[in-house]
Image (cartoon, rainbow, N blue to C red; front, side, top):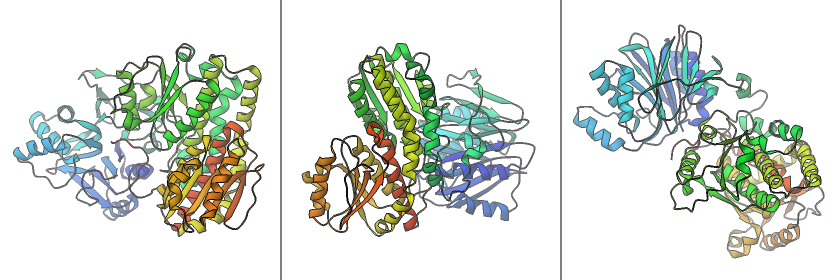
Length: 608
C-alpha cells in the first residue's frame, strides 16, 4: 500500500517527485524518500511524512533530471530510515517497491551466498540486489529487471534506476497498480494517476506481469510471456483540481460534502434514460437475463455496502444474494454456480483481496462478472465482463465516504434493473423508485446541514474509550459503517450490532461510560428498536439517536436525538450514512488525530 513515482525529463524533476509523493501519501506515510541520478546516485530518506523528507531535500539543494520516489506503509521491517525506500544495491541500483515479496527469505539466502550484504529488514532489498546481480551480467537494465522479477513470487510494483544506465527508468508490476505517464520529451510512472496529473493526463495502465523501459522519448513494454506488447494510451478524466483541498481542512471533510454532487453524477444516466440493462454495458442485457442469483465480493466499507445491496436485491428483485469478504472467499471451498452474477465492489479497482477473489471466481467457472468501481481504467473493471462506474471523483481520505454512498446508489440501480428483467418491477414502481432517486442528493444535502448539531455531540465522545452502534434491517450495515469510521480515525474502540442481538451478550458492555449510537429511521422495525433502546437506558447507557424528521422521538435525560430529513424509504441507508461519517470526523477533530492519514492504515489495500 506504498506509493511510488518516477520521472525523467530535460528539467529538474525533484519538485515533480515531491509533489507526486504528496499526492500518494494517502497510500502510506511511515517514511519517504527519493533517489536522483546526477553525476552519481543521490538519495534522501526520512522517517515520517513527505514534508520532512522534502525539507531535507531542499536543504541539500537536490536536483536532477531522472529519479524515483517512495512513500512507505511498513510491512517488512520497522519504521526506520534504514528500511525507508529507495533501497540501494552497492551504490549503483536504486529501487522503489509497493507490495510484498513472498519468497524474499529464499532469495535473501541465495544473494547472501553470492556475497551481497543486507542493510535493511525489507523484502525490497532482494529486488535491488537481484537486479544488480543480473545487470552485472548483462549490462542492460531492462534485461536485468526482467530476469529479476522472474525470480520473484508475490505482489509488486517497482521502479528502478541505475548509475550506469542514466537515460532509462525501468518499472514492472504484478498484483499492484502501476501506470506510465506520457509527456512530451518526458515520461513518468506512478502508483496512481493523481501523482502525474500536474505533468500529463495521458497514461498507460500496465497489465499483470508487464515490465517497461522508459526513456524521455520512448516507452518499451514486455508482457508476462516475454514478448513486446503495446498498451493503449488513455486520457484520464481526472483533473488536477479534483485532488486539491480547496477551502476544506481535510480531504475527508471535502469528500463528505461532495456526496450530493457525486450521487447526482452517478445517478445521471438512470434518471435520464430510465431503468435498463444497458446501464451496465453492451453485454448486460444478455448477461443479466441469464442469472439466477448474485454473489457480492468486497472488503471493508465496500463489504458493508454489499450487505445493504443484498437486502435490496432479495426484497425488490427477489434474487438470492450472498455477500462475502473477498479475502475469505478466495481461500475457502465454495460451490460455484455458473448462472450466478459475481459483483465486485472496490473504490480503487486495485484492492488486492477483491481482485484475487474475482480471479478465484472466474477459475471456478463464473463467467458473469460485474465490477462496481470508482476508477474506470483500473484492474478489476478490466478483468470484468460488465462495469458500472461510480462517478464519485477522486477519493483521497483513507476513510471512505463518497465512494460508499455511490456504491449504494449503484447497487440500487442494479436491483431495479434485475427486478425489471425478471418482471418484478411495474411501471408505477419504476416511476416511484426513480422519483426517490431524483430526490436522494437533496436528502443527503439536508443530512449535511445537520453538521453543527453533530459537532455538538463530538465533544462528549472524545473522552470515551468505547462506543456501541445499533441498527436493524437495512440500517445494521450503516451501524457497522459508523463503528468502522469512528475507530478508523478517532481510535475509539467501537462495535456495531443488530439491535436485536443486545440481550444475547453485548448488553453486558453497557454502562454510563459507553455511548450508544442508534440508527433509528421511521421504518417497520422502529417500534422493535425502541424496545432495544429502553434496554440500554435501563442500564445507564447514554443514547445518541439519529432519527427521521417524522419519527416520534423526544429527547429525555440520557437520550439525545438528531433528526435527519423525512424518511427516505428504501434509500434511507444512503441518507443515514452521512451523519455517522460526520460524527466520526468531528470526534477525530476533537481528539486531534490526523483525519486523512490515521495511524497504521493506508487507502488502497494492494497487499495481503
